[in-house]
View 1: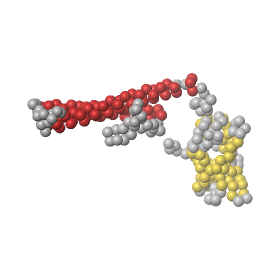
View 2: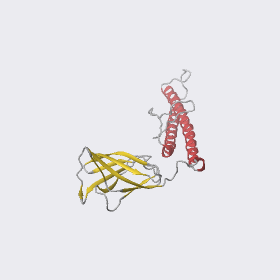
View 3: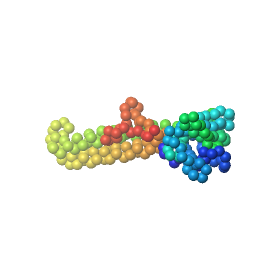
View 4: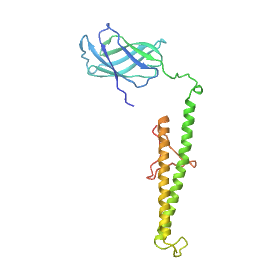
Amino acid sequence: MSILAQNTKLNVTPGGIIPIVHVTQYDVNRELTFTLYDGNGAASIPSDTQILIEGTKPDGHGFQYLGSLSGNVVTVNTTMQMCACQGTTECKLKLSRGTQVIGTALFILEVEKAGLQDNTDISDTDIPLIVALATEQMVRAEAAADTAVDSKDIAVEFAEKARRWAIGVTDDGSTPSDVNNSKYYSQQSEYYYAESVETLNSVRNIVSIIEALFGRIGLITRAGANIVTKSGDALTVKY
């Protein structure tokens, strides 16, 4: 997943208007960038400067994480601990080079409450319904795949019958009395092959539903074998 970084202008000289950076509770790897200024101009920061983001959360616990520097732009990725506590977290960037250690102006990391809290009783939500739907679709996919395999086998059988009648040999090795049987078996072969293709397409539609719910998972038959397409590709859902 690629989300555009949230950029904040930040002065290396303390004071002035306090910028606010908005995140959601439990955000992990949300990219934040800070463009550093010294007064009104771009700050000149040596490339070997170590950058840390540090702050104190509303629950009184602090954090400190390493950032990266490119020119006068600092990049920080949020962590679970950084965004664990809902509310206003006062933060600064700490710049260290040799014996010099300075802090930037203050900024606020405003952590918005998550939609689902980590202590929520899952049984009281609609999540079990989603799981049940996915399970139902998995069963349907398995049954449809079995049908596709059966249809393919029947198609192959009729194709062989059509070949035998076309060359003048019946199943028992005798000469056929009605050459029209070749056409009949050929038509049956085409029918069952088309049915297997249609069923496989149905499987793919079911798989897309599961993909939307849970990402990539593998599909197997009741016997434990991988469900594959005509070309031999395994049917999976992106995870």
